[in-house]
Image (cartoon, rainbow over all chains, first blue to last red; front, side, top):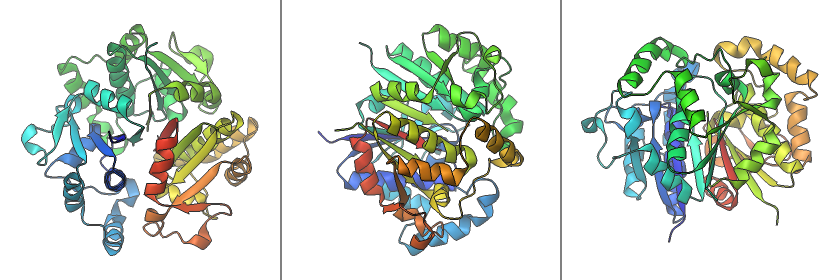
Length: 134
Length: 134
Length: 134
């Protein structure tokens, strides 16, 4: 059975958006089973309107960061997310915070599953590594 | 022996305040032994004056978030913390940062224990899952 | 073989800068093998120009925090980092984000190794505890 890795993403900024995708694709390429759970501000990242920016005063530099990522071959956020899902990475929206964040089922990207905190904690307990990304 | 889960909370914002309580109550209901360690800005969350707000420009929306949580049956922060402790979740203040944050023993909520980094790392090493929340 | 602990640092603020050093020194003193991986905004913390400040409006209080740490015997950031390395803690800069953050090999502090995400995830999978610090 493949080693499991699980991640939580609770922030919606560009940096916190990229990290689970970079880590997720890397782990999937290493043969791991990957589970990423989006909660609180992270919930926005798995909706059709996702368009993450850098935090605070860094916000203005988001375009520069995007260009630099493009230069090293990283696609735009939406395509990067799609690629990650195509590699078999499991993407979940936290059912507890969807209402809180005003996110409805029909707002979610295709392939995103809705999951509760208990089901996620079970996945985390089975995982070799769990990363709480912001 | 029950599976252990441990968490660190280093931010004092409303979102980072709610997550260990939601996760902690869920894990306790699943029969896990739960340890939550509050450090740096998180230390304020285990004092009698705790009144967490959302971060940055989200601050103004704290009331709206609180109302939405109330609607789904989540109590106010102080009552939620008390409920969590009553479920057997262990709450610790980091001894190293209490002085740094200007938090004294008498400022702590009832039932909060003072713990050092070494003792926490020991608990983390024994845990199936460790989440560093912000 | 010694127990491993691994950490990720993705923020460059004073609080997030101190935590891996406090935790790292403590874990090393407990006989653990420690690995700290600096990525995104964290990458700045392992360069010769590192000079971390508190986040947002807390920035102005950085000096006060530094003085309070000095009073309890914690050295300044650069000396604290050097001490941590001398205790055998392994410090890595994330190769994927060095370009993104404009950090070159010659900018890195002595002793800092360059590591990719895959190599880090392998270390994390071997670790008893992994902390994602901001």
